[in-house]
Image (cartoon, rainbow, N blue to C red; front, side):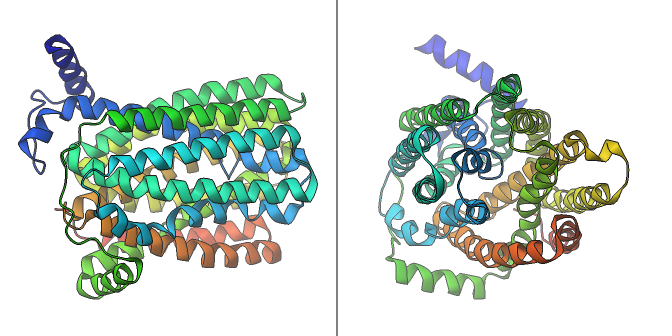
Length: 437
């Protein structure tokens, strides 16, 4: 056992670049002693979760699933809002419930198991689903998956704040993104190999692997050494809403962060429309999907550790730089669609810009996650995370619907110009944020 602990400490110190694995800023001594082991378990859990997310992506994989089963086109437009808002909206309502639990990792485990069941159901629908009824079942299953993700998300961040010290969290998320990028790269290569072959079996296999990823997530989460936390302050849903609204009024720093985060939604909203421009060149064959998945995996593998290290130094600057990158990618995507020439009629240019936007989106996510965890403390972290995510979920539904209407009216390329303007505003807002203390 002692040799195992020494090995874990050495791996931890190599991954973080620390010479002393017992240096901790804001977690208790007993949690600090368990930090190397917990760091590796968090890494394994995050790897499973991120691989599962990529292989069940509402921006890439599920649109192909809808096309293969012959679901109506309008249903495809509901995938991203349901996926994102369904995961974010309920969090304020479960924050009080989780707060009443001395160990929050079991809520994390329950959410991961539900996501695994939903992914298996989607794999089955890839084999037997058809037409409008199949599309409705996909959307319903996606809603269950999204709600379970919301439960896991708030518990994950709370457990992270209790078991990993400040200054190590961004590094952890960066390494997990890099490992998941490598795994996703492998899956995309398999898709490219399938090419124009019938895709229902391949998609079913991908979704089954996603289910295995969430099972890994649950297994690692269950093994994390989490000390019982305070249970005071647990609230019902209405009291949580009242407390959350009062926080927005009293804590101007938290309000400013949520404004910047809302504007940074432009990176998430731009991805499916940029992918759509590429899909128009490749149709629904799995070769085009595989190319996008491969480039997304490479982007995540290369970018996440860099963003993670930078987020530990200044998560505010990461948010600002990600906003700048989003604006540039949106402008490039819109310009490419308007340029003449046979080269712009291939999926490759769109896929490359999509990969750049994936790099930027990882920065936006790592920056705002690290910033949010760092500005909160152990007493209010669960509520801060839940409130911020619930607000973002509401905006995702409202803004996503408006963006969809604009896309129908303007087209995908002009819409990217609108999102570039939104990203510029996000840059200004993030630049004015104070550093997370």
